[in-house]
Length: 333
Image 1 (tube, helix red, strand yellow):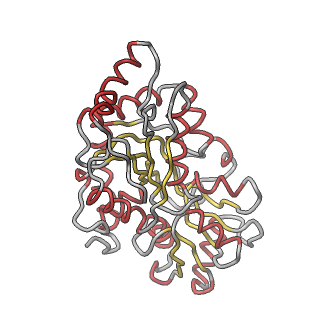
Image 2 (tube, helix red, strand yellow):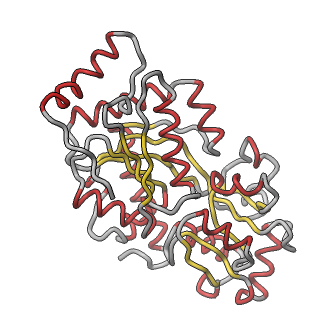
């Protein structure tokens, strides 16, 4: 991967002066307005919700006069593990590198799939919105409701392949395991196909390799509009507005499961306080604007705005909660 160019003394001075100058001019400047631009690392293959997260950040940051282009880099592997270890071990202090994360990333932290890493090993910048789990099937599938699917799984679980992002213990696996248990199905009897990101899940379903997808709303909306998928249930406490407004919740159908997950960005642990605050303040400004609310809705996300220390506290609480849920299935290492 191409490294971020080193700055000479002049550029370092400009980096510190530009934000102050922009504020003095009354301009809503953002960190992307730097000579070398910025980078957002997508820790998955193109097409999934991690991709959407970086694209939302780029769109919001570049929607200002004079903003430099933010490049996207793809670093799939381990639902964020490869990107995590790369940045934490090799790119710890890069001042303009963001990495997308999701609730799946936090679950992997809770499960020990990032090794001995802890939430405080990186700097959490901004939560851009909240997503919700969904269960979807192909548009021509025989299942019309979540109960139809659960009945089929109870009768012949070996005949239904379920596409998921990650492996056993991932958030897609855990959602289906919780549903199956409520339906009287042993989760160990379910047949899963491990894929890398939501984009691959839906491609596999369209090709007929899997019959069911355990995914998230933001990923799924890309495919329901084209008539390539049917959502059986959203795992939210109430029906979601927008394209999935007509889809009942799992709770409405007799399965009391709610699965929200945050989406946002973090930075390396050795990024300076000044650079970290610069990014946090930029997202603070962005997330209060009506334009960002529109962009977030178009990305299939729902309101949740947390930055800096408030986000870090939320992350620690979320990881602890995921660890408790995973312990029900003896998944914690």
